[in-house]
View 1 (tube, rainbow, N blue to C red):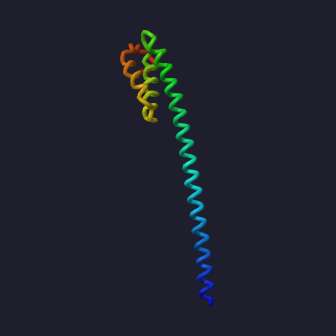
View 2: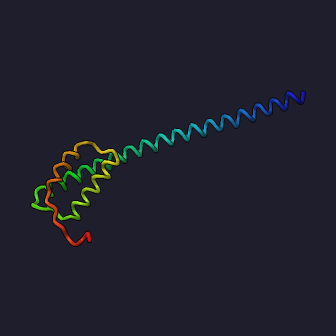
View 3: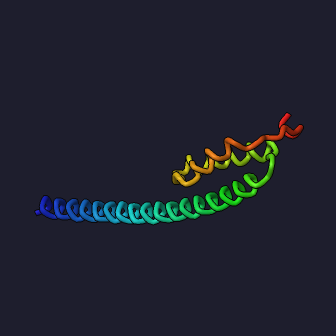
Length: 110
């Protein structure tokens, strides 16, 4: 009789602990999914802002007769960060055109 009571208690405790563990794992997965979704939205927003800024600067610099070296370097660095975040091919075309820019050497990079 005591064996049955002990087995019942052990079964109940094991079931309770297992149920608690499953609920914690389920909550963790839901939280993880929510964080990943928010990160994806943030990344898309950042890519949009970067694409807009890079495009605007491209057309400004493209209309100038020459671009200072530090401005060109900053534009290229931001463009590379944009690509690393998964940016699209639209800016590849602008990058190709930027290779025709005349770069004015300044003292800022020395």
